[in-house]
Structures are given as C-alpha cells and as structure tokens.
Image 1 (cartoon, rainbow, N blue to C red):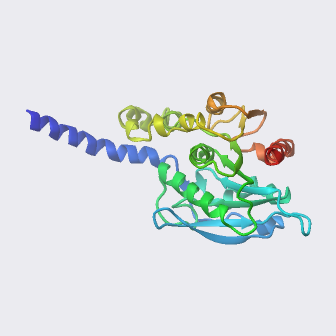
Image 2 (cartoon, rainbow, N blue to C red):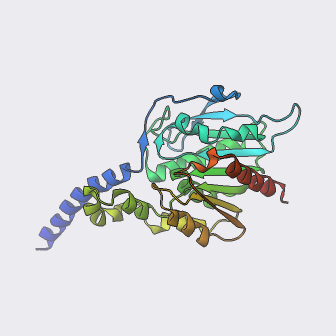
Image 3 (spheres, rainbow, N blue to C red):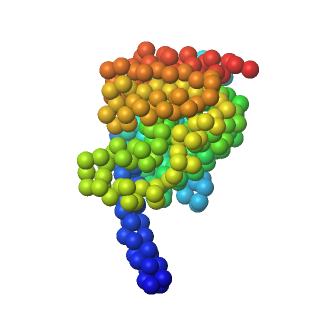
Length: 284
C-alpha cells in the first residue's frame, strides 16, 4: 500500500508539473518582431550583448544621455520591460529618458527578441541582476547614481532585483507592478479552463518567499509607484499592496484615465517621475 501511495503521488506530480509550466508560460508572450528603433526618435544608440548568468546572451540597447556638450549624464536608468513582444515594442514608453539627460539601458530577458534561452520567472530576475552588474562597470556610468525602472512584469522583477542588489541604486520606479505571482496568475486565468486547475498547480509557481510583496519590505532605497486606476491587466490593488508594504521613503501616484503602463506616455506623469529621479540623485 505504501508503494502504491508513492506511485500515485509521483503520477499526480507528473500531471501537475506540465500544468504549472503551462500556467507559468502565461507570464510571457515574447516575439522577435522589430517594432521600432531609437533612431526613429532621433536618438543615438548602440546594440549591446550582456552575458547572462547561465551562459545565455542578452540583447540590449544602450542610449547615452542627450546632455549638453561636455556635461555629464544626470544618472543612469536600467529599464525592465513587461511580458510581451521584446525591447523594441516597449521602447516608446522610455524614449524620453535620454532626452531628460539620463543614460538608458533597456534589454530583453532570455527568450525575448534576440536574447537566447527560454523565459522563466526566476530567470528574468537573474537576467536583470546580470544587466545591473554589467551596467555598473560601463564607461561613462556613475555606479553610485542609478535608477531602476520596472513596468508590469518588469516592475515585479525590479523589486526583487533592487532588494537583493541595492548598491548605487538611488530610486526604484514601479509602473503597474503586480505584488504576487500566484495572485496575478489567479487574476489572469480567472474564467478560463486554467482557472479550474490553478488551485492544484499553483504551488509549483514561485511561493510567497519570492514574491515582490515579500521583497519590497526589504528595500533600502526610495520607491516611486505609479499605477493606473483603470488598469485591466494588473489590478490597482497590486500596486497599492506593494506601496503599503514598502518602507519609507516612498511616493504613490495613481494615474487617471490611462491603461496598463500607459502613464509614462503622458507628459505630466513623466515630469513627476523625472522630478522624483532628480530629488533622489541629488540626495547625499
């Protein structure tokens, strides 16, 4: 009977594991289409390759600040994009960064765009840590004046990254982030057939110990959270939960009449983020 019980357990695990993998894949919708380039925005840029943590090669775009001749950059921004398409699709959301006087690194996680590998929830965190380490040693980058800007999946990822490696990061900006992997999975599959199997397979997704909500409590840098009140992809409650759990100093901005990660396409919102960046980078 004991052997039969063990056999049934392994059979159950064998059935649940593909379901969990299927659920985790719902976090990622990569493609290789080139939607735009920085050149179309009148920006100087260089394609770069970042060594990944497991031998993968991560493709990125490096954009120097459009500062006055001879003037240094105000700081350097690492951009962590959302879960769809690739870096070129998300670039219009951050094209303002170099124009505001900041260096910008934006890149694709494993399995996105021209980056090698297959995406996973822990894998994108590891890739982002590798990108942050690469950024710190680049010529022209002051490693003591960094900002990490994460949007949607990139926001959830950014919390874990900065909580683990805060050195030199003066501000963490989160745009429509989610607070829990299992929580956003429930939101995403609610009403579909996956919703019926999620309770059985969700335990195979990252647990609460790896949630952004857990990581945000450990932050040692200032935080700026913006979230759309009309977000139909990541409910506003996720952003509010992260903000409530974070230590001071922190700032909350609820953006009206915008959709998911649409806030930074609006000049008044951008100006508030830029002002927060300037304050953080001027602080001792």
